[in-house]
Length: 340
Image 1 (tube, rainbow, N blue to C red):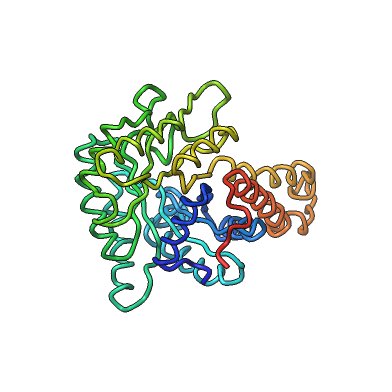
Image 2: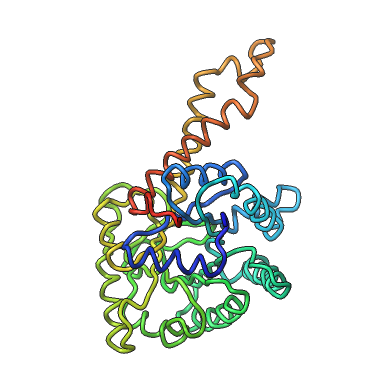
């Protein structure tokens, strides 16, 4: 069962929350970065999550048509085949999708899975993200209600982002300011609109100062202890202890202490993209710089095919990214926790 069924995915998230660990959610943009993520999980003996952003899906769709749905479906189908060779269980997820891309991405993908489920099959993806952080909270939650109903019918978990994450992700930009902190009132309004599981399961990307991309220490003030306030504020009204399954966005560059606090307060998924992009690219840079005259036809020479063959540098890139994924598993305490 290399790709999680809906029931197994729910079990994965339950185990993570109970065990106070989280799954790395690794953004992929190619078959090779997919293999790197799977390899990293397998070497860590950790289950995990592989995700495709709108930009990643567009890239996967090819530069001729740039069709996001085609790119996402193609890689998901590929993953269902190749993941069988890895001794771990993975879930497939789509990352940030703002309002103007819902009709070209998440809604069609939900329809794809609904058709599969109607035939007695499992959904193609196990979860999808709705990023309404650029909308008012009222509009965000209204769209969230619609998408949650469709997701639940297709046996899919929805991820929602109710308040902004700073920085830039696939063209969606938010300033780094005091709005990057979700309030208890925001959480209460979310629970009222989306329920606490009875309307369908969802993951909550709450903001506690998170910023996408690369940032230097001191430029961002993370307050993962805020997640405890959100849990307790909603629990006090609804009588359900630790009601939310939180997602940690903007995880690249976070300290071990910040991650540990987030895990203690209900984070079950942490997104990684920037760090894994660098880990994939860095060995390629080293290969090109170290073999300049072999990868280029300099001064009329012919170079050396063995060095510009994509396999020669691709293997190193895969290994570099896999190592970073394995490190992420250790940071998030998921090492050695794979389903037996």
